[in-house]
Image (cartoon, rainbow, N blue to C red; front, top):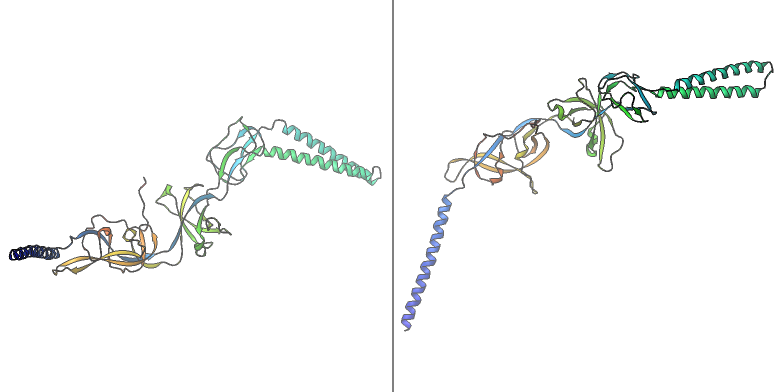
Length: 375
């Protein structure tokens, strides 16, 4: 009985030993098989790092503003009698734009002038009689006060008539007429807009930390999306004396030429101010940068040999220090040198030391001044 138990125990041990040995052998063989395999090459796009002249700049947005601009309106109420302009025409300073009906204003002026003339005659006559002691000084003083009051009434009536003659306060270009002949015009009602179109102002804001880099006379470049392929040159003409306490920005005003009258007040504008001297920096497309909490990285590609000694292309993760951006490009301060091959697309599937294939059939946009298509 004991002998049979021993035999059975040995058989069980043998069976478990065979099972354990098979499992161990199987694991070793699978490991050896997997070791002979390699990760398939990943397809990426690349660009060769180049060094180019880099001009540091401050970019902002703003609005085009007329140096002189006004909504022309009447100071007094009345009926429109004449309109002496056409919409969109250029006018000189002082040009008569419209008149209001005078009604009996002219007659009142004539009456007041006659009264003032009579008062002047009376004053001069009494002044001579005073020398002969024919009248008192009090009478002469009364005559003088009466004359002054009459002349003041004449001036007031003349001013009322002048206010009904609406003139251009400065030379410029008129907008679209807003009134018609015979229309009742309330005081302050707009008749037409008048804008001086050349030159123009561009008002924009810069952050307070950039204020030291901006000065009066500095060159600026202005673009508007209406004429996306054109730039307008100008210079900084004034800088606000205070910083906005809400945004911590400073208002800056530039003056630009508008000889062709392409720009209009109110247009949205992008403004670029070049600061400092140009420097040569490594430039790459912005898409190559992977921004991480532990640092910004790119992948470079270089030749090497795999485990079997074959020539392959390998990806290497490199930490970089980035600078400013312009268009599609970003400046690399440290980490990449001219001639390095840098991955522009396909980085997400890479790891350090990954084998890659390069396919540059589709190039990544890498322009310092891109012109996106209008949507």
